[in-house]
Image (cartoon, rainbow, N blue to C red; front, side):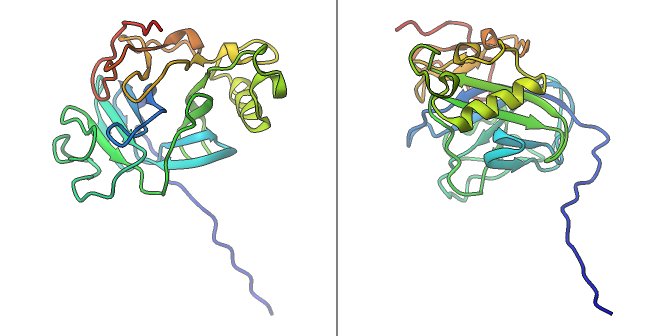
Length: 234
């Protein structure tokens, strides 16, 4: 008789996942400070199989799967989203000091996205971190410069894609918002640049709300180090 076979993706069980929070964003990157994000380790463990999405787990432009990487409480991980293709851009899984490349930090774990153009949406976007590609959502960040009054299309979010991603992450319980969600519920991104990053406070507090976040002053970006609490004032 006929024989059919199927190849299905499978991700092994990670018995010791860390607790991470998305901690800092460079969304308006330049050639000297490309798009990147920082994660802070709240509780140590092995990062193997964790999945980061530019978007939501069910609707995304970029998916990054973490390698086996043992991290400790207080560590920082930098995910460089637009590498230059340099030999020095090495994924650090054993030694924090081996990678070169733009904005690499010898005090943090540097990882490099190799899936093509890893650009983040400049000032309006949704990011999520999951226990596995189809696992529980561990953290998310929604950011916007819009308001319900400035952009009335699609609930103020400007596009159906962003509106629906926001709704999905709010429904998952990883972000606090009104009903229905509004752009004002997001972390505010107005004024962010390649050196004015979007940051949590220095204590990396995570209440799942836009108020956890601020934009630092010019040259205040601190990938791989404690965030500064000073706020950019236009």
